[in-house]
Length: 462
Image (cartoon, rainbow, N blue to C red):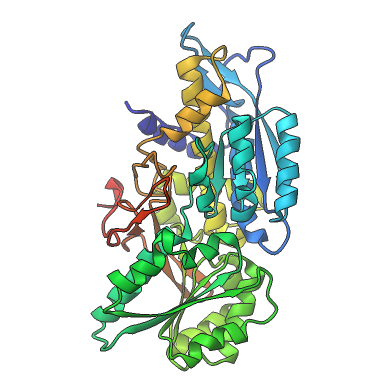
């Protein structure tokens, strides 16, 4: 049985344990054994919503310590089952680069062996330090800076690819939908992006996006360019109006903050973009925004479409759907248990849902390393080798099974474009994923694009 099939079993076991509220008998713990992990989260500040991924990962580890006692593994030398407790350090960097560096150094001093890094720009600030210190890390709910590919041996595994790599799939999807609808002429599409380094890559010729939209999609697309906005805006009518005046059919918004998204939907309505038939995709919209202000999104949908992107599940799925996917059920159960019965959509939706997913990744990496080398042979270098060698990855239905390429460091396999109805972000389990299975970012920063994938259906969905 493969290690990832074993992980699927762990997920099922965990979901069952949470549901019935009991814990298995813990294996003996040898004195002095502890693995310290750090979670560096965006828990306050303008991008607070992203921090729900860090909170979800923390909830996962809290449950593992409570029910199993940490990491249960079979020692390769003795064959005996043992448990290593996991000490979890949780800290807030408020999406501030300097605070993230300070938090990383503090956690390193406390013996951190594995880092969960939450937030694109803050995480980019510790790439080089992690490689220097040989502390492996998992990036949680955020995109990456291509700078990581310049490191001789990166130690932070990316689970969110560069904007320059996934944006073409989204743009191509809208071009396809335009043609399917029988529209004549070119689709006019513009991008409004947060003014941060991980979005500025859209303008870099060496990363391929400008070439892709002009050469691959050029005959069907009139690309209106990218306009940048502050991380914490108070008014973006001027930026949006740039595309309105150019006759845009679609505007994509690249921003992750709840506050910014509220400004955006209000300003889009004020400009009557919906009455002009402009499709608005607030790409990484936290689910708590439409949940709090459903009338705004309903008003937009009366005339045009307001959509979003998500990693996958939105966190409001009905019980019959949740019960079908053990990874999704685990996320719902953890959220309810540790947050007063809430559903994940009340905690920014997919941001929280995928926190336990990252918890599972880290758990599996630690377990596999211990079972291969034992406690006496455990090291962060070996932990890093395990992390970068995971394949395939099965998450109990949270994501399709996928096969990471070592050159792209565990990139997202897919995303979904979702509708918004009655304040809820709707993820249809039968809808097709936009995928990146053939997209590769190489160390020399060249990107080879593929057409958006159209299958990627887990066996249980067939």
